[in-house]
Structure formats: structure tokens, C-alpha cells
Image (cartoon, rainbow, N blue to C red; front, side, top):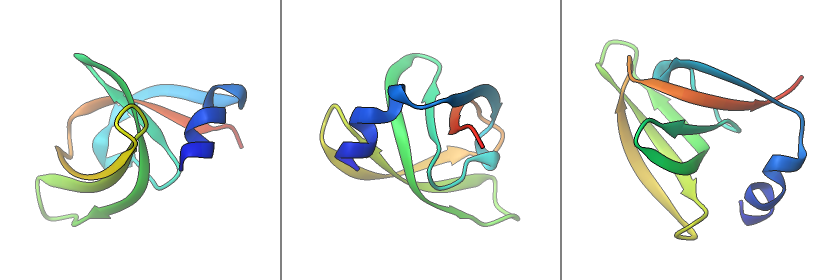
Length: 82
């Protein structure tokens, strides 16, 4: 994950605003009020619930963390261009 985070800005990325429910493994995202980029390792989205559970890599802290976001939370997604 450290290598991916280190070279992230050197790739062609599609950057767009969307809801947290659209995040997939391999995406990165930022939240309003937080400048740090979060790298999505895994997603557990249980469609009937109001939250999406994420396993994310936080490069500034060099750690992986479990996060829970509201499915309708607006995030800025960075996704490698296809």
C-alpha cells in the first residue's frame, strides 16, 4: 500500500464527486474538512444498511483502519483511469 500511495499522483486519475456507496477497492477518496487521502483496501457494503464499512490505508499515519461512512455521504473519489 505504501508504494501505491507514493506513486498515486503519477497516474492518470478520474476525479469526481459521488456517494460513499460507490467506492470500490483500489479507489482513493477525500472527505470535506479532511485533506488526507484515504486509499480503499476493501469494502463491505451491506445494501440494506445506512452505512458502508471500509478498510482504508492512511499514508500519513502509515496504518490501515476500519472506517464506517454513511452510504449517502458525498466524497471526492479518485479512480485510476481505465
